[in-house]
Length: 374
Image 1: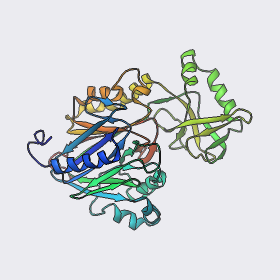
Image 2 (image 1 turned 180 degrees about the horizontal axis):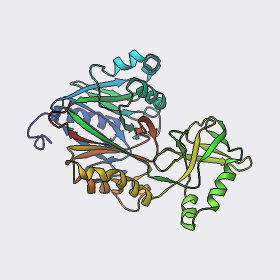
Image 3 (image 1 turned 180 degrees about the vertical axis):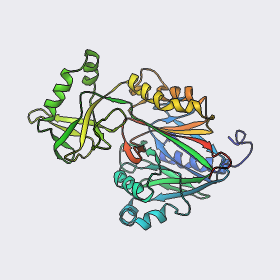
Image 4 (image 1 turned 45 degrees about the vertical axis):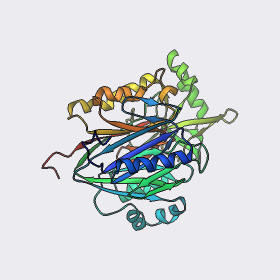
């Protein structure tokens, strides 16, 4: 790696570990830090990791990317689970814990899903740093509390089994963020007229199951087969808009149904009056959506590097071949250095606000800031 950086010590290093026991992760993180001597390093454990040209699923692997960033300001932070009540209760405490010494252009954030109230965290990011993208994901190395590991190395290795680690970036860098949800709407939008926490009770005064049956009846045979394999609900980011299309929704899974009452359980809390629409997901739609978002990259200078944070429901769980997302991405980025992992929830902005997603590929693409820009 030092050879690739022409012998320079990197300013930022990200590392992701899959399939290793905790003691091995700590040892590997420490050894990487000692060997590479990055100014700042952070990362987490994952179910599977992503390298420049491959998605390495369900086997021990490490994905590492490092960068020399002249003129770029960095401020790292680590927040323990017990600190969240204080951090979230006070705007000034929140900013001070995130190293509020410059105007950030981007945050990279990794968190434990069992101990981080990510929706509340991102709500505060959207207020405290309005318009600044937050990109990253939830650690996926364990399906039980205390099983994930996060680390931050600023000359001394800090490890956490909960909470979050992250870094703010500012100065001489340009960052393009892409959030590809890979779903398409079917039927028409509906207004929620009854909801209780994550239970969808009525859509325009009719049982949700009845509305879903109407949508199903209007689908093609191919789309009916897709719906049998899973249906998703899109929550409109802006319910005041009259015209809604693909990309205007936050995609949430339909977790279950009570056929007797005709209600649905959704993987999120719903509110009366918001607009929703049923969605389908398949490999072709996911590829098409990702290609559509990557197309503008072909008109720009080659990127210096990228990070990819993909849902652990993608990969070969979605595609019938390996490297489904990264192979498409590199067709447009031309083999740029890239690292990432499969997440238990992806973080990224849609419509100017940061959200926690599911079933999504969330990525950031870096380029140096052109000389003369401020």
